[in-house]
Length: 343
Image (cartoon, rainbow, N blue to C red; front, side):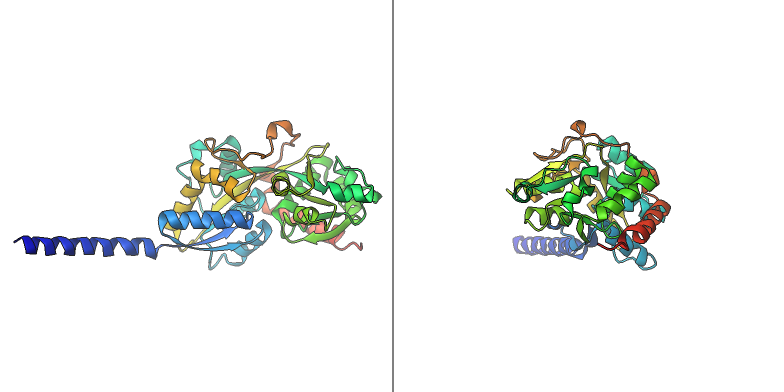
């Protein structure tokens, strides 16, 4: 009797174990990530360890990610798009490339993150915020006998010819935010006049928005236009880089997350969405040297992250500049009037 009971118990335990394992092993998730590689990798590793879901992650800039979702709209290969500037997420939402989803954690988020969700019809949600600015290599400017710029208009001065780097707004969400910021500060025609003058000083239009400040840190360019949190990352690494919040004021991003419409692994995509909004997970950003302001009010802001209360931020019109029509218009004008100019 004891022997049969033992065998029965062993059999039940084996069945239970075998039944539990496939539940973890079967789960899959295809993630498109638009933050820095280190943060993408940290999220992937932590999510897999906690859930058992196998993640296939691709890192692309915001503009490239948006383009991929558009190209694959009839046969989506991505389940969730995590990170990157909010404007292309809003554009994807307007084109119904992403699906309506209200995360359980929505009430725990800062107003700007909740507003991102409302504006999109709950097809995206804010996960962090970051202010636009530029950084310069202090050692390089000193060696060249150049003053440190403090304003956007300073970057167009002839003394900085060949010293400035910025991303292409077609591929970079960071650079599209810059383009939209200039239009909102100066007016559209004046902004394109500014960009035409700035073009004379540009040594390269990069694909990635964070590439210009990495180049400045390495002494490959004197000045890089990017988000301030990306500048802070280079400062923390010990590079002779200084961050500037321009005197005219500046725009900001609401980094976002969107579940793709027609996602093949919808259950796992929703799991990632809830996971990514938890305060303990957002606090992990510091481990990846990511210095954005987290969207969950209970998350710990990384030491060194920009204090928005000290910055001259514009009232960024996310609804207008997050629309597909405005994006297409501004990018077409940039291609026609700026990209085509000789240097």
